[in-house]
Structures are given as structure tokens and as C-alpha cells.
Amino acid sequence: MKVLIVGGTGMIGGHAAMHLKSLGHEVTLGARKPAAAGTPMASMPTIFGDYSQKTFTEKDLEPFDGIVFAAGQDIRHIPKGTDEHEFWRVMQIEGVPAFAKLAKRAGVRRFVQLGSYYHQVMPHLIDKVPYVRGRALADEGARALADADFNVTTLNPPSIVGAIPGVPARRYETLTAWAKGLRPEIPDYAPAGGTNYMSVRSLTEAIAGALERGVSGTPYLIGDANLTFRDFFQKIFDEVGSPRKLQELDKEHPLLPDAFIVPGRGKVLAYEPDPAQTKLLGYTRGDIDRAVAEVVAAVGG
Image (cartoon, helix red, strand yellow):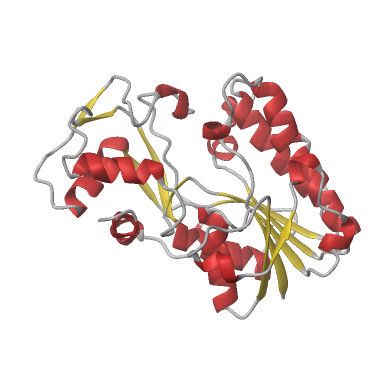
């Protein structure tokens, strides 16, 4: 299958590109700028455009049998001073369905959108959190285009654990440096609460499954391990060989500010993916410890 990965120079898109290529797909990246030199994506064919500015054209998309949309923005990407409602309108609510519609007009047969888990696990947040509303409407808007000739699925994953050497991973770089004792100004605790975590390898397996076998019009809630923030941070400390043990405190943490905890500090966003859907998509579970080791190694562990 000829596949375009929009957002293909990023961490998730890059991993997806490598995995799909290993399966025999003919992969092209869609990006705003070239991949960083030295990364595996730097040698892959690339077309340049920005979905939010509508600079991709039907002609750009016509050669492809399938598109993986991995360019969606999350809550960490809002530029300072930007109106968040306008940002989500452009980047999610209108931007994603408009790009899916362009793909449909271009004759693309399969479209996999990478979304986020909040609106499926905690639908009450849709009317309370603009980011969650944006994700929900992007998901619904893209899937509304599904028909017999245009297979559209959405993968709604949790927090993703992964890195690619050469692609900035500041969060994990800081977490690893803290665990190694190189950031003594960061106190040894984690905020109360937790969430589901999933490795980028598992996610890319799910992407391939959705591209090849996904049931059109379906939103797939995917994931792996439910962990407290304390337990996840502790895995990084353990991986670098630190003897320090973190405690959980109900207070804001500099590496996980309250603004980034969408359900609210102290809440545990836990769920179990549907076993039948997990089997259909063909992704691995129980992969977090391996992924943590891989990330620590990638950022200099």
C-alpha cells in the first residue's frame, strides 16, 4: 500500500513510518519541514505542507492508497498568548475533518486518524475542557466522512512512551536527568493521580492494524498499562539505577504541571481496552517496561 504519514517527521509519525515500511508498505512523509539529519526519516521521501493552513492539494494526495494522520496537536502545543478556542478550531475541529475531506476527494481509500483518549474515557470533559472538545469533534468530523469507498478510523491512545534519537524529547531528557541526580532542584515526589500508558511500538502496531483491517467509522480506544504518576516516574528512576524512592503528594509538580493533567490532579484515568479490538488491531500489551528502557537509552541513558 502507498501510505502518506502526515506528521511523519515527529516521534510517533517517525516510528509509524519505520514500522509500516518494515511491513512492506511504500511510505512517504508529509511534513512542514524536512526530518532532522541523522534520523531514520531523513532518507524517506517527503512532501511538504501544513494541513492547518490548507497547503496540501488533491494532487499531492492522489498517489496514496492510505493516509495516517499523526499531526494532531495536544495541550502542550498551544503557543503562549494564543486563544485556545481558536487554536483548537483551526488545528482540530475544522482542520482535521477538512484534511480528511481533501483525502476523500483525492481518491484515498483508507484514512487513520490519531486522536486522544480523553473524550472516550471521560466524555463529561467534552463540555468542560476545550482541548477535549476539539479532539472529540475532530474524531467525529473525520469519521462522518466514512463510506464504502473511504475507510476512516480513529485511534484514541493514552500517554505514549517513546523516543527517536535525533528527535527532541525534552520531557524524557529532563525526567532521566532528574532520576540520575543531575537536576537536584526538582523534588523527589510525583503528583497525585495517574493514567494509562502505551509504548510507541504498540501504537505503531495498532496503526498498521487500523490501516489494514480497521472497520470503517470506528473510534478505537487503545492502551496498555494503568499506572499512577508516581509509579511511572519510579520506573525511570529504577531504569537508571537510582536507589531513590519517590513519594506521591497532592501538589503540583514542575515536570507535570496541573495544566497538563486534563482530568485534574488526583484523578486516575484508568480503563481496559476492548480485547476484541486489541486482537483485531494486533498490538502488544505489557510493553511499558521495555519502552522505558528504550527511552532512557535514546535520551542518553
